[in-house]
Length: 155
Image (cartoon, rainbow, N blue to C red; front, top):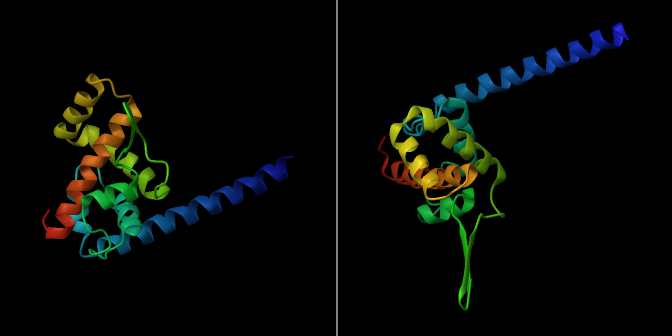
C-alpha cells in the first residue's frame, strides 16, 4: 500500500505540474493578444479567466451582431416564455457551458474588486433574486459592457 500511495502521489504531482505549465502558457499567449488589455481592464477579470473568455468568444468581432447575441451565447440572458396570461422567466439552458462557467467566476470575483458590481449584486438580492440569479444578472450586464468595449476598442 505504501508503494502504491507513493506512485499515485507521483502521478498527482506530474498532473499538477502539467496543469501549472499549461496555465502559464495560456497566460503568456493571452497577454500577447491585442484584446488582452481591454479584457483585463474589467474588475475581477485576470489573465487566466480573461484567456478563457477570449478563447470562448473568439476575436472575430463580426461573430456576434450585437450584445444580445453574445449574452444569449454566454447563457447570461434569461429566456422569457409567455402564453396567454401566464409568463415565466427562466435561466437559459442551451449555452456555451465553458463561457458561462468563466462568467460566474468573473462575476463572483468582481464583487470584491468593484463597488459598482457589488452594488448591482446587492440590489438584485434585495429584489428577491437568489445568489446564482444575481450573479447571472451581473454577468449579463458585464458581458454587454465587454461587447461594447471590444467593438469600440476602448478600455
